[in-house]
Length: 385
Image 1 (cartoon, rainbow, N blue to C red):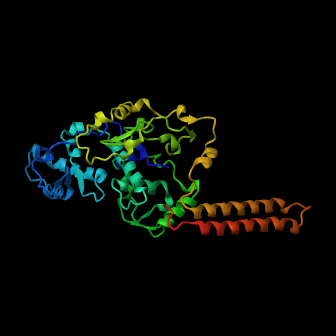
Image 2: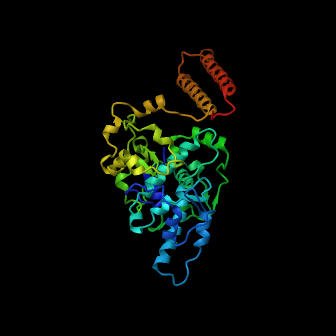
Image 3: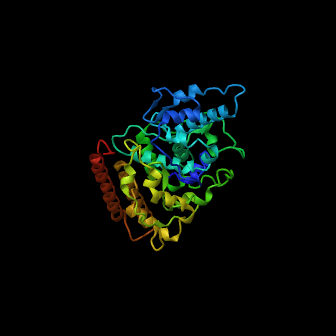
């Protein structure tokens, strides 16, 4: 499973089908702030192109009475900048690079960007960084991932004390805008999360979560939910592979082909630091061209091995467990189930005696015991290593 463009669109309402989020990153940002905010931030608030959100919030706290159109636009721009900080901010979400402010110069142009795909690109990038062993923090819109998990994985879902009934104007994420209780779900317990993840079955997953949700704004970009174009956000390039999670779109999952997109892996590690003068639209022209062709690159039969059984392929090539304990547990359960099945099948046979049946069961239980001892002794102290 994976969070997709569909999830971003329906949970947040961010536009999906639009221009890639990109622009200059090497400007004199003080004059840019003066032009778009009507005030130049102090040096303590603007460092290396990043602007403190607390300064923006305090400076544009309340719109003055009788404000003219220019001042109203400046305050609206400040509000939108704070919203973007929730999506693209640093790990503390207290700063945002002013390259995003530049994109808010013209509200009409700003509305034509694919903010949803940029958000997903940023989230993919941060989740990749978070998987590195020494990483202790993650930036980006992690709250969207949380809302996604609550909907798709019920064993993680809190209970709403006062359930919210969505109307036609509400975004799907609003359903969690209420008091919640977590008495039946683990919180901040990593081993419990891993155990739930490893031992749940297919019936404990909500594959298609939005069957009856028809908000027209959220569905506006539906035609490219299944695109295979790369997701872009300035220097970030993340490939998008919906062919791997077709069940989330209510479609049959078949064996996906290995990507043949010739993705340059070096772009996955690029950061803005030290690259202020790079024109990313030109530097990544190939990837931006692919995004512009997103409607022509929709998942089809050519993305699958039609003669390969998906379940067989997945069990041969997929990572079925996150811990050794879970793998050992499932192996033991399989052994026990096989023994019980054999015992039940032989129960009605008049030609078998207890002395003939019991040795096979004892042998199986012995294998399980030895397997448990071996697996427990081999479990590393740091399973992320």
